[in-house]
Amino acid sequence: MQILFASSEVEPFAKTGGLADVCGALPRHVARLGGRISVVTPLYRETRSRLHAPVCTAEFSVTAGTRTFAIQVLTGRGDAEVPLYFVRCDELFDRDGIYESGGAAFADNHLRFICFSRAVIALCRACGMQPDIMHLNDWQSALIPAFMRNQAAHDPLLHRCATVMTIHNMAYQGIFAPEAFDATGLPRAAFWHPGQLEFWGQVNFLKAGIVNADMVTTVSPTYAREITTPECGCGLDGVLAARAHDLAGILNGADYAVWNPETDPLIRQRYGSGDLAGKQACKRALIGRFSLDPELMERPLIGCISRLVDQKGFDLLEESFDGLMETAAGFVLLGTGEKRYHDFFTRMAAQHPGRVGVLLAYDNTAAHEIVAGCDLFVMPSRYEPCGLTQMYSLRYGTVPVVRATGGLADTVRDCERDPASGNGFTFEDCTGSALLDALTRALACWRSKERWQTLMQRCMACDFSWDVSARAYLDLYRRACDKKRGLEK
Picture (cartoon, rainbow, N blue to C red):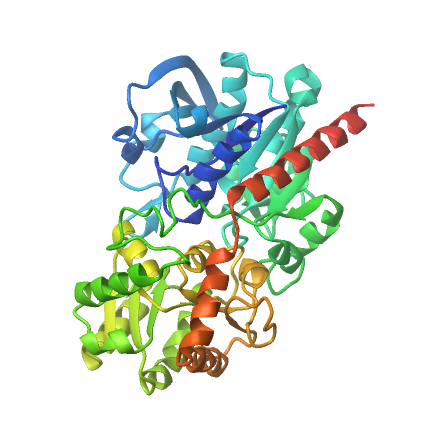
């Protein structure tokens, strides 16, 4: 089985969030399990400095509406000898930023990813590939199943290739003005209606993938159920419910080659579940980094790493923060996002010097230091397709406090409701009081040192490695191929 894996972000070459982490790690693990997998992604400006001696293996052109764009395909290799293909079109991708600049989305994003999607198909012919599976990720490559369906009757290669569409976050759908449809080159009679790309008078790229792919996946079992409801479906719940038989939720994995306290080069002192002394050294270093009160060594320290947006539940954290400050706990935040939250946490750091540390930035080293140095980790998300940071915190013995939604519900069980196997603290209501109640229960547990150490060690024993997820994807690829063969008979 040969797999071509397409994504607009692949770590370490280009990243804005968890999509890049997933698309950097999953193909490596599929390859280690025997899958013949290649990865294709755009060549952005920021990608160039991370490539070593790329080779141009193909040149061709693609069209978007009335415009033609020259494409080069550069090749390289990543970890586990996964072949990498980079779609180069400087006019479209050689920019500051991946999707936006200065907080404003690029006006031609529809053209950029129409061309990327057409280039993915074209490079198969140019490079002599005959994939059994095309695995596509989010709206930026979601037009590919529609293009393949439109061309399949005239192209034996496309006729036999099955497609898998993975949704990483329903909130990002690639919705554009109706004029963008003409740039796709798809026939209007077949594809411009509510059963295809049309979405309340606009063009919806993600919908194209959901409707036309052979199989649809998302990044946790709970989120797969949630997105078929009006609360989490973002307007596409009915479309997804209609494809329920072909919709699967496969939990993302944690990359323990990068996130492991026993081997992590970015933390002050390495440690494992059998010897937790290093975690105290990491806590001391974190307190020093943020100029916090040294007395916090004897008090609980709560960490948070996130985009500062409503989806991540920061309104709940804002609502409950005064109550949290009435406890003895300290708080450390890393992230960027909406100005209102920047202003709020800057103000909280000023009002509570020595107890609240805030770094409004993306800093990978600081992220590792927070996950290793804190006692608790909070993720109050209103919805969370999967989430990776709670998996990282578990491995580092940093007990998670999360809202029970999406992948958070699939990875964290409340230790008071499930004393035998619980590995954190959860809450369900989208209120600041529910969050504060969960934090209060966690802080009470922290005061019982023996109980807390047992909980830490249980957290560190959790295994959310990518191998489990990669095997599930291989099984799904086989199912997609079987379905495709059935359609051809």
